[in-house]
Length: 178
Image (tube, rainbow, N blue to C red; front, side, top):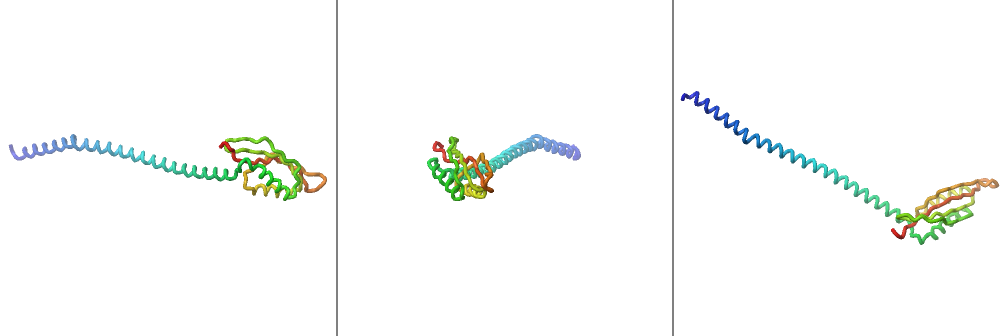
C-alpha cells in the first residue's frame, strides 16, 4: 500500500468516525437538550402564571380588607334596635330646635333584612323653608344611617315662606339575628 492510499483510507475512517459520532452521540444529545429546554420553558410559563395569580390574590385580599373595614364602619353607624326611641327623640329635638312644629309622627311597619332593620317614620312638619333646610342639614350630621324618601313640600298660601313638609325618614338598626 502506498502512502496516498493509506492517507485516503485514514481520512475516510476519520470521516466515518465523525459521522458515527454525530449520529449516535451529538444528535441524541441535541434532541435531549431541546426537550429539556422545552420542559424548562413550560415550567417558567407556569411560574409566570402562578405569579400573576398570586398578585391577583393579593389584590383580592386588599379589597376584602377594605370591604371588611367598610362593613365595620357601617355597622358602627347602626345602633341596636332598642335605641329607636333615642333616635326619634333626637329627630324631634332637632325639628323643635330649628323652629319647626311637628304635625304628625307615625312609625310604619319595620322591614327586617339580613344584616339590618329599617324602621320608617312618617313625619309631617310645619315651619319656614330655611328652618326645614337647616333641619335636613342637622339630620345629615347625626351619626346614624338614615334615608329620607317620599318628600313633599307644600307652600302655605297665607304666610310667605311657610311650608308644610310630609316625608318618610327611614332609620336603620342592627339586626339581632345577624
